[in-house]
Length: 108
Image 1 (spheres, rainbow, N blue to C red):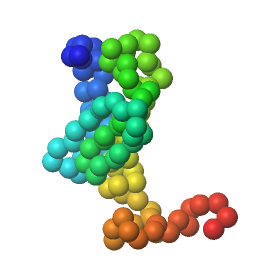
Image 2 (cartoon, rainbow, N blue to C red; image 1 turned 90 degrees about the horizontal axis):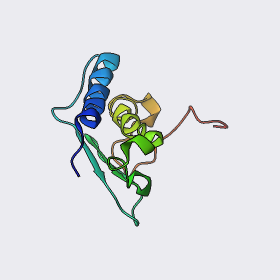
Image 3 (cartoon, rainbow, N blue to C red; image 1 turned 30 degrees about the vertical axis):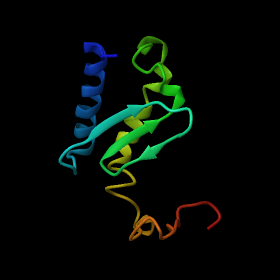
């Protein structure tokens, strides 16, 4: 399956709008990787979005029918800035083996 010019244009616009919103980018290269699986649900990388979600099965093949799924890649792309590059001080951890503190959570 090859994306149509309109589909490619929508994704290019997503990137350009994010750059306008955040004023910069903090990586040399960013990849949107979309694949399908009936087993895994999601894996996220630091400078990429790997979405393994069954609901994206027809993301490009039925573009006009899958408008509800079009927000997933923008959502993950924004996490590159919000939550990975910039985050509240107490959400920073030295590595993934250290639990995050979260003073913003309810009831803490």
